[in-house]
Amino acid sequence: MKGKKMLFKPKSLLLLCVASLGFGLLMGACSKSDSPVKPTIPAKEMPATIADCVPADIEALRAIAKANPEIHLFEGDDPSRWKTIRLKWVKNETGKYAVSTLSLEGKDVLINDFVLHLDGSKKGNTVLSHLQRVDITAAVKEVIILAQPALETVRINGAGKAQAEKVNVQGDKILKEVVIEAMPQLTAIMLGGDALEKVTLVDLPKLQDQSNLKFRSGYDDEGNQVEDTKLKELVLGGDLSLLDGLYLRGLNLEKLTLQTSLPQLKSLTLNNNRLSGSFELKGLANLTILNLAKNLLVAVKVSDCPKLEEFDASANKELKECELSLPALKTLDLNETNLTKIDLSSFANLKKASAYSAKITSVNLGNQNKKLSTVNFSDNQLAELNFPKEASSVYLLTLNKNVIKSLNLSMMPDLERVSVSSNQLEDLKVGEEAESFEELECKNNHLSAKLLRQIKNTLSTLNKWEIAPQYLLGRVDVEKKQIRATEEINELRLVPKVQKKNGNKWVDAGASDFRLENGIYTIMGKGTFRVIYTGSILEPGVGNFSTFSLSDPYVIGEINV
Image (cartoon, rainbow, N blue to C red; front, side):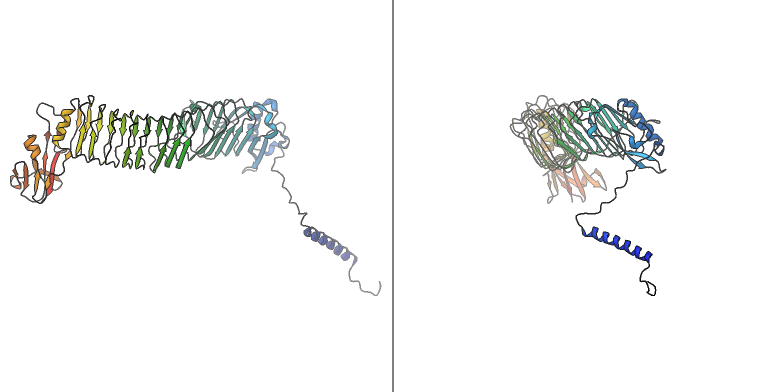
């Protein structure tokens, strides 16, 4: 090679060959679409020894092991060799490993009488400070999980073999979901949390008494409730065949999902929650009580509940539709809703109907309402209410604050108490057969003294009669500047008086302000005048309990001249 210049030195040639080989391999790999490069799977986050772990967590795990000696849990100092219960770890702020997930499932179902106690409610008790999830599928014997500060989810599946009779899971604002299922001996559940989003209960065939299903976020040492739980959604499914009641008052519940027939359920209490939109319920054969009061419902439909006797949807301010097919219904409460019409004609067993402070303009009663005894439709927009002769069992009638002009109660012999104040009544008929009629309130209407006297003479048993004030209609002739009181003066022998408005007060008018002739007052002065009567309208010797006064007068007429 002497005399010739070398293009590559041996060392450089070797490097070039290696580079070329690497490039060829790389290009070959890229050209084969059926052989992708597999990413490297990172190793699981796992402490090498318990010395790398939070001491309190190891103490808690050893406590679980002590409660279950036959399973031989958490033995030795190497967490990677621990079997049966699967753990996930995270590093805390000091770099120590803490348990984030505790699970027992799959092939471990055959474990019997598993005991899980995680009670951090008292100082020195078991606390897993970073535990976020508990997922147990085993034949559990006892489950108590209290005050685990990071806990978000709890799932307990008894695998259909669990012997546990009670489950107690209490969290705070972190706890979001609890699932309890397949526990054949479970008779009592206590759940709590400040912001639970979902609770699912499935296949709990011995859960029976509603008092044993408690939703509370705290209890004192004696077991008394401290605070209510907040729960958004409750799901019920599978075998809950013995459950006889659900008391879910005041949980802030937004959704209830029934995926089971609940054949023994007798009462369902859902008042003071946040149920909204439409609520439909059907097919609960033994349900007798349904309480939906104080929610946010717009429409309710309930059917195929043949034993339902008490229904309450009061204080659903936006409720506009209420469709009920309930042959056994005895008590109906629809107070403080946005309903405009109510049809009661099909309820043959109805005894009490109440819908005060709504928007009702129409109530339909029928010949099947023979058992109706208590009615309250106060503070609505009713212009009339007609009682068929079959609805003669009513003894308590409350119709205050409506716009009723005429009311006929003459065919209702069982009446005992009637309140019809603050309407526009000009005519009120009562029957002589109402021998137990004791109380009548009809103040703030347009009832004449003559009619009131007739009513009192008809109802000899009255011992409470509130009639003042009254404001008559049709007694003023504006063109002639006259107020007619002929009936009061000539027939009833009453002595009215004339008053003149002075600022915000009424004072007696002067003799020159008016002229009285044949029971007709002609106003001579200028300003606002009225003719009133104060005192008893009854005949002498009948009694003075029905008395008009200056503050609550019998106003015959008022005119502005």
